[in-house]
Image (tube, rainbow, N blue to C red):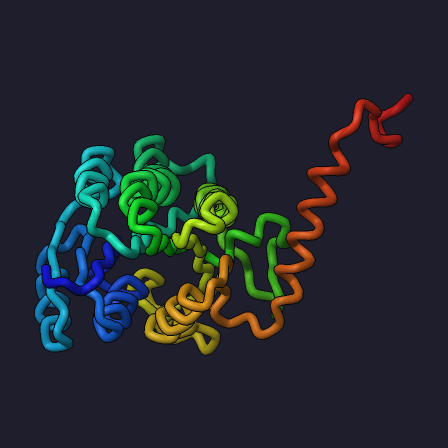
Amino acid sequence: MSDRPVALITGASSGIGAALAATLAADGYDLVLVARRRERLEMLEKELADAGAASEVIAVDLSERAGIQLVADRAAAGDIDVLVSNAGVSAYGPFEEIAPEDLDRAWTLNADAAPFLARAALPGMLERGRGGIITVSSALAFSAGAPPRAGGGRAMPKRALYVSAKAGLVAFARVLATELDGTGVHSMVLCPGLVSSEWNDGASRVPVAMSPEDVATAAWAGFTSGEVVCLPGLEDLGPLDRLAKAELEMASGNITPQLATRYQG
């Protein structure tokens, strides 16, 4: 690595991760690239070198605890300025039909990896008083109350496992942002909608799918401007304000020794 700032990106071999790697390389960062497919990472390493970025490749499976620990050890080295936790798996399907071993791997990757890596990287960032964490979630994190068919009559996928993990990441990144306030270190959660990448297996044919490059552009612009929640396609941020207000009303309104009227009698 050179004296440039360093970003560690998981799920960097394709899609949003690869696009963010290119975006940060163009903005003067060196990279630590993490994914399962070494050959894809090495190809990306050569592409980023053309942009003047040095890269370190870590081929590892973050659905395994040993893989998380390996990357956490690297994140804890003290030189990481930006951590992007992007690795994930769809894990769609009826919850009762998901094999226990698949459930374990999907939950480890989608829910557990990001907080463990953040915990490893944060001390170095806090010591320097700069840097931050981008946690990649999904717009589906806000879909728990959606009917079986969403707007436009599109059927929603069976998604209990996926949405529960992604909703947890939204809460994690938002609360972490409040804990880090005033430290010079920032936390943001990225919640893209449908993205035209191989992760979505053919989503490029769907007119509403956004390109990974545009998602990366929004993510980096949102992060550098101090956004806590980045929804790349949402023009009006009013829903975010209303969500925060509703959360506060529910949390504070439930602090009482009295039963709600509907439960009395």
